[in-house]
Image (tube, rainbow, N blue to C red; front, top):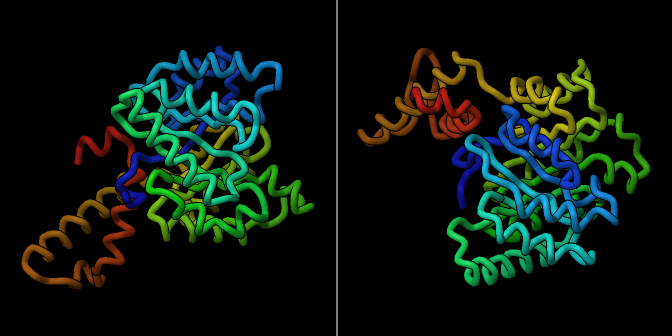
Amino acid sequence: MSAPSARRPRRAVLSVPASEPHKIAKALAAPVDEVVVDLEDAVAVNEKDAGRGNVVALVGREHGLLAVRVNAVGTPWYEADVLACVGNPAVDSIVVPKAEDPQALRGLADRLDELEAGTGRAVPLEVQALVESPSGVHHAVQIAAASDRVAALILGYADLSASMGRRVEASWQFAQDAVLLAARLAGAQAIDGPQLTIADDEPLATAATTAEALGFDGKWVIHPAQVGTVQRAFTPSDDEAAEAAEIVAVLEAAAAEGRGALQWRGRMLDEAVAVRARRTLGRTTPEREDQQ
């Protein structure tokens, strides 16, 4: 199982409807870490088949990840959605909505094993679990640990707000902490849900910086105009990245000499500091990583 810092970053994640090809094309060209093509809530029932056809036709992104949010387990469209994802090598991961049953995720992992073996798919699909119900929050630890395929937990505010009768603008730190803890225990990424607006404004910036301070790896957005603000909130500065790289190098050199904790520039360095430094490096841009 990969640690979050070893995975490709998901700082800003742009969700677009699978039924709108022009929005998909615009999203695929956007400077965003991941695009999620949504077959679930963003697509009307009478457009599900057309949306799935657009998923089949998706092309890979030169930079960044491509995910598909399938319809929920047990719906009439779920199996066909999964088949479409397996059959398209451009798709990196499946986002499972309304995740609250660890057994369902284990069942999906087994089904993917079977389908990928049958199709000869070279790169296994990752799974991202969208936690958006009281039961999902309650079972977050088991959901994150359901399969090695689980790469990320995503906190979904709209459905969680509706099911709890709690205003969206209320504090959700209890749910954020639950999802973050579960993700870290499983070595997965923790992704904050979107602001339910399309504005690039101060509330968006505040929500992004707050989520980053809490420990999240990224945040969903629902409009391309929001990408830059969220991407910046989760991207270390040049100074932060340089210091993190130096800390990792110093500790690796010390380990090679049989030393653990050591003093460095008036600070004590140990493995806990190294973990944070590696996470910082995991959120750098691909261009910066190439320079290190």
